[in-house]
Image (tube, rainbow, N blue to C red):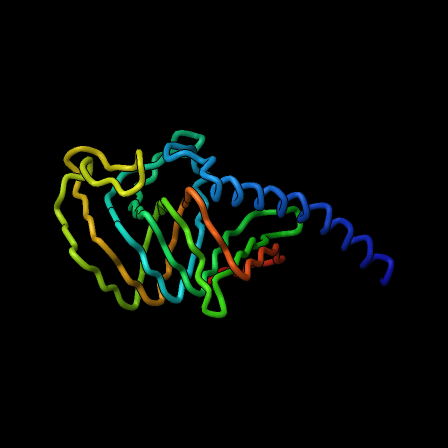
Length: 199
């Protein structure tokens, strides 16, 4: 049994280590701005929870993104010039021959926030305990709101802009997220066998 356990662990590592590397490359590409605002999404759900968010120069609108097989997914887009995220957790599930596994990323603990610039979220759902916005304008034409260069909505769609937004206990279901730059203190990324999402 002991020998069998060692063999199974080697199989496990052979499967999960490449997955971890691929996921790390994806995160690095997003952090460096290598993923453009128009891209093909996988369609898998990314769950993100944040204890507190401070965002500056925030725009929001609705549009669609597309999967590789041509399926269009309606999303709510939120973009901003700068974000400070305290107590960040991000996770998504993927399938392996040994069953489901979770890639889980955490950071921004011990009072030091994750800092992102030119960040864009493509969301299916945003749930928050409390939101405070300053100088909020709703009903703008989505094509006229742009806090991140090149990211604006379709003409005739409803857009929103706020100078600042503060959010507590945010729970987000996303299909994609990008950032021009991102700094993550206390960063930890791990692949965990089974389902271990942020919420």
